[in-house]
Length: 298
Image (spheres, rainbow, N blue to C red):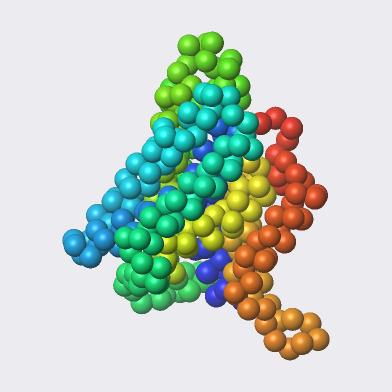
């Protein structure tokens, strides 16, 4: 059980990166970007191609982050931002981002095919860390997720850009009349979120070992569950939601099923995620860790 809990911590770390990036996008637009998962996918492919040519995991991680940032910025500049300026409703933009998701998926299929791409980094020899069994790769994933989260918190809570981001998140029109360029802040936020999501795609691909043009979309559904559980638009709550969801999704398949004597297959993870999402929406629709006030960081 403790071994499975260790896997859950690694999964939660990756999920936290993706969910925080998603909640940043939501915070400045009030729109659920359904094509968010494709940023992870693009990051994974960028890391794979770069690693093939350089052999360096560090350069691959940087390439993944930059590719994610560029794609996220392009999403905002070409689709989400113009729709917001033209006064489209969140539902219309939601549908538009779903279409963008399919476009990116099929573009990747054209260039790379639909087959699984094997992407493996040497995880190193597993060793005991307290009650858990971690590889050096696992430790690097967890440490990088913590470091990125701390840096992001400092950016948003201590910098001028962070103050502008929070102002746009709380009231876009009031921020605009106060002299804040809401469009520029939103575009910068999407680029920042894309950097995080692109890196998340890299570590997810390395952790899983293979991916396809569709793997980011599947992970987005789990990301959405974590974001909703923590509270959409609330990054601190989102991290907590990601930890809970990530651990649950790893621990549940390790639990024996009463009266059956077997175990639940891990292939049902998406079903578990949807069940968690449904329960949270029914019990705490604003999220498990939120009050009535809406803000990016609480």
